[in-house]
Length: 186
Length: 366
Image (cartoon, rainbow over all chains, first blue to last red; front, side, top):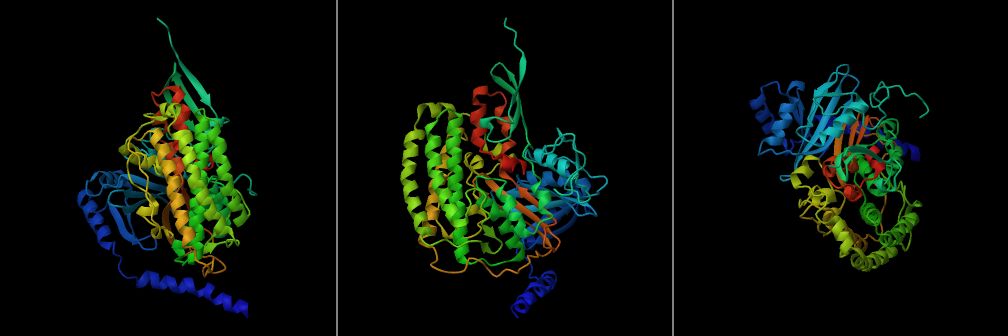
């Protein structure tokens, strides 16, 4: 009896929640911020610079932009250098393998206004090439080396693109989903 | 004319002053460092890859082994990010316990830093004093969760163990004890002539550099920027407590020392308040489904670890295991500035500057 009591809240709950989440969420208070960013970037770099802009609501209403690969550096440089944007702090850089494509995410922070933005770019798995942002953010240097090392993304124009955590003679990029570990037990 | 030539000096990976397995390739011209290149990865265990095959609860002990001087904050980083994605409510008593252990861990971590840092630059006794006091914190943790370093204490939704009877009283006692003890440290170290000569005006950088390198923690605050995630993007119940964020001005090693010492004072204040307001009873685990299935989506949250911003980026596809888990490891970010700081520096300052960053290699290498 006790098991029956426990089971129902486990399964239907997330499913029921999801439907609500995706359809009838109240508009985020940050929506104007992301709309403004999208118009500003599109105005400066053309319609195709920003593919999508949305609010990541579970993540404290984080404005998120998906950038086209060609405009990656231009967008970053505007976000960093425009005085009213001033996203100078590279809070985090991640690379994700979605199996259909790779994704690079930079979480940028403006420490004065306490505003955050996530910028993403989608990359082809076979030809994962992205211009390096290490001249904009000093912190990007090692992060890009880490992404190269573990995810196999090539950053063109990087001052020293080599493996950072794994030995130089390592074969493959472990965080790729199709990476085959030498020893399955590990 | 004396002819000089550059020499390549290899420091580490086995060297006591590198605080773990850091290797430095240093090019020296006489006593001047021309170039220094950190070589890292000797302790890389692939936590992020391993986590993809583990459930959210199973990941927690792995995080203990990253920043092993402050495992409680590591526990909290993953637990907090998971809770944020699932939208869970945490019982108050659990939050109090979390804050108490995280702040005690911050104190323990800073004490280790202070002791070993002074050992690095030639003072033996502060190390013994610091470890004596840190031991008491470890004993408290041992009583709480049965481990001295790798606690595995927090769970998604709360904490694993409730405080045993009398434990809160012991914490209170320790706070009073250490507050008294801090005076001894200041007497022993702060005004020391040799210490000041080794640290004042050494390893200086400005705020812009610090931001560009995305430094965090005392490494960022020492440049005069008031930035502490406990205040600037509050998590847990930190909003309930009054405390200050110590900042420096000069951005040198001496101020870093002062910042960290004052952070101990502030942490003690937080613990004292938490002990006073500690709920007499209540649950230590919230309502959590037996199998943790995190809804699809992604979340990045940073928390203030003793070393800086410890972030956790979870990408979920709605399964019981994360699709991708990324840790923003503050030591990894903070270490990156080292070549810049060491350039054209005298070689005798190498150890002082490296020690000032306060790295933990388990965290640098992930």
